[in-house]
Image 1 (tube, rainbow, N blue to C red):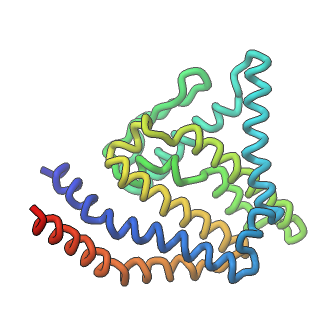
Image 2: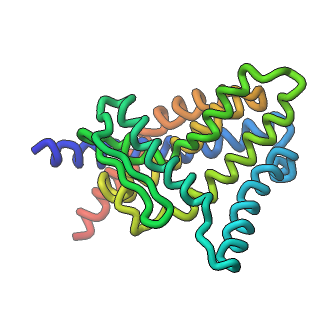
Length: 237
């Protein structure tokens, strides 16, 4: 019975999540344009450091394969994946019972219970980036630019891991339904980006509040459109 109630709740929540995802993407783009970036954000020095993080992992992994060796950085990716499950599990009252990580066979964590945040944590939570973000709060002022470069380099590293792990065969993404999980991860990734940009003083977080308001106001219109389509289909039959 609880599983059925949870499934109904997720499907009921999905229209709002879709509206929120669209609103967040639109508001982020508007906020970037208002800050003078817009499409030029792709050529911002920090964006280039982000791309460098992805490029470094691709080139390093290719070099290791050419040498016939395992990529040792994949162990760091596995450790981050399992630690995010465990830490968010602690934070959401589903503490880990066991945790393992290895280079050869990957990793596994067993939680005492589960919830969407703990299950999806590795796909939206850039753990190493957040650690660097917190340390940046106490870094000397003269080092802040270099710290931003390191932060965005690690964000590129995180995206490399995300590209490798995110996919239809990933069991974590099916536990609560793939569509619900995919939309939730997208929203939480944008929220993470907004938090990072805000803390580093690169972009105001006001766009996130505006996103929630726009999605909420659009919800009755969306439900009305769905009901109209259902009524049309019923009349045709």
